[in-house]
Amino acid sequence: MTILLLGSGGREHAFAWKMIQSPLCDKLFVAPGNAGTASIAQNVDMSPTDFDAIKAFVIQENVNMVVVGPEDPLVKGIFDFFLNDEKLKHIPVIGPSKMGAQLEGSKEFAKEFLVKHNIPTAAYDSFTVDTVEKGCDFLATLQPPYVLKADGLAAGKGVLIIQDLAEAQEELRNMLVNEKFGAASSKVVIEEFLDGIELSCFVLTDGKSYKILPTAKDYKRIGEGDTGLNTGGMGAVSPVPYVDAVLMEKIETRIVKPTIAGLQKDGIPYKGFVFIGLINVKNEPIVIEYNVRMGDPETEVVIPRMKSDLVELFLAVANEKLDEITLEIDERSATTIMVVSGGYPEDFEKGKVISGLENITDSIVFHAGTKLDNGAVVSNGGRVLAITSYGDDFQEAIKKSYQNIDKLNFDKMYFRKDIGFDLI
Image 1 (cartoon, rainbow, N blue to C red):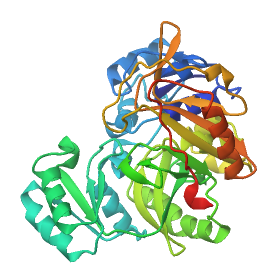
Image 2: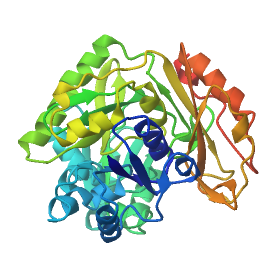
Image 3: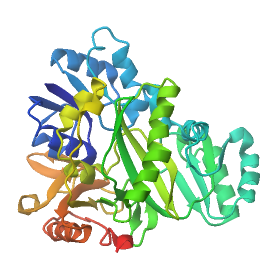
Image 4: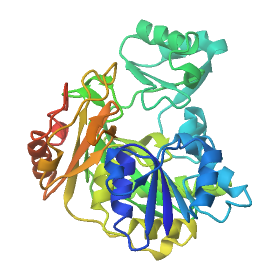
């Protein structure tokens, strides 16, 4: 098969790394890709949201399958674009329909879906610029801390958790009136705060049956001890040590099954990943959010633990035969540590030459924000590299990743030294 993978981050490099191991994959294109994907596949200078360019390329190169990494093309309707085009409709797209992608594209849509299908989630209400003062009154009825979520896509940064009521009210006005997150915050969901430990549950579905992938936990804050600004993710661990069979059974019965059944009941075509962000409150799993693609950096620990052929799984999704596949998982732990640009998630500089990549042993380097510049690998984003390792437990895996990070260098390079700190 000739496959086109859309995206340019660590998630896509991990997908590419796994997909080229499949005997079913003859040729892999990545658009636009990065320096890591360039070393194992063929990068194409094309935006994942330029559907017309994608159509022309797919026809020209006789592409047999399109795998969508990031959320933007899904929310903009790439699945429907292919389905409604005579020349493209026979080509499977791995990712949900535009309607299904609203689970991530709109926080309000997701909350309504959760409530409608009796899936445990936090109490909430949503507000616009016209009801901003009602929103401020609603905040006053809640206990601190206060959770404010931009309704639309805000690249993982549209969630604020604030301790002080007056500050929360001020931020609500800032989001709605001053458009802090642009169009993404034209509507804001206010939610009750849940106190517990977060984890991610990943599900692959063909719209009827599903497979639950290994659990993972990521670390969002830039600073050690989970302090400072939110990022796209500074590291991840899989499996999550405290998730036992009892909790897993609750997650499947109360959350995964009704989610897939709810999609069917609502007539929402869905062939792809469902990322369920959970919080474990006194051993009761509650949904914080849905994403409609794999998480990053969780992909960099989940995919390496999958022994099954990823392309075979994707074909089964396309043909609605996922129930015929047995998912094989590596029993070892996997961890990944993100190496980021100095200043991230605020202002940072790109184009820093990365040295030491050739010295990495016993770890996998997934490129997140890199590009090739005159033969040199240089930084090209906030999150630059993900260093993934295996171990008998997460501590052993983490140790290997840190040992290899010591061999890497670029100007103002930063990473958290405490990934997994809360699991010991």
